[in-house]
Structure formats: C-alpha cells, structure tokens
Length: 98
Image 1 (cartoon, one colour):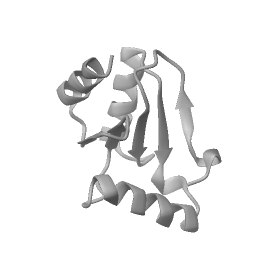
Image 2 (cartoon, rainbow, N blue to C red):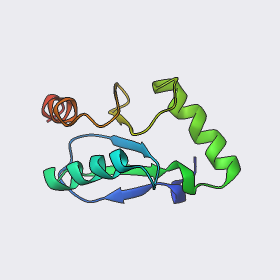
Image 3 (cartoon, rainbow, N blue to C red):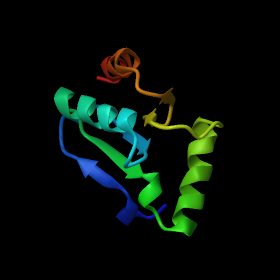
Image 4 (spheres, rainbow, N blue to C red):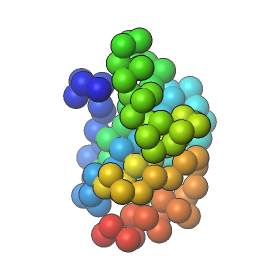
C-alpha cells in the first residue's frame, strides 16, 4: 500500500484508525460520516478506486484482519478490528483508546 492511496480526515487523535472501504458502499459512507460526526481523525482507503497491483496488496492486508474481506473494515491501533457498520462497537472502541 502506498501513502498516496491513503486519505486522511482531520480530527481528534484517538490513535491510529484505518478504514478499509468501497466508494460505492452505503455502510462505508455511514462509517465515514460517523467518524466525521464524532470529530475523530482517521485514515481510509477506497479499495475499489485502487489500481490492480495496489488493490491486491491492500486486499491481503484486509484479509489479515477480516478473512472474509468485507466492507467496511475498521482497524484501530493495529489491535482491534470492527467489521461492518456498527456505531456502538466503534464508539466503545474509540472510548477505550481515548
């Protein structure tokens, strides 16, 4: 994964938050909006917008956390993974890492 593929949203630092998403996914958009509404900084990659070689590399990274490779996949501080749009789990995880 190259740094140019990673987008960043400025906000409150709650640790390293990475969102693996699809640009066309409603649940991925809701997850992005949740982070924005909470004012939390996070990084994200829209997998479907990557070039093929980068897409394959990032897919392997996602599979380490989420073998089904479904979206959205949120990884927090390289320790916790939340699969799917789950505002309660996301907010609980952010509180844990505050």
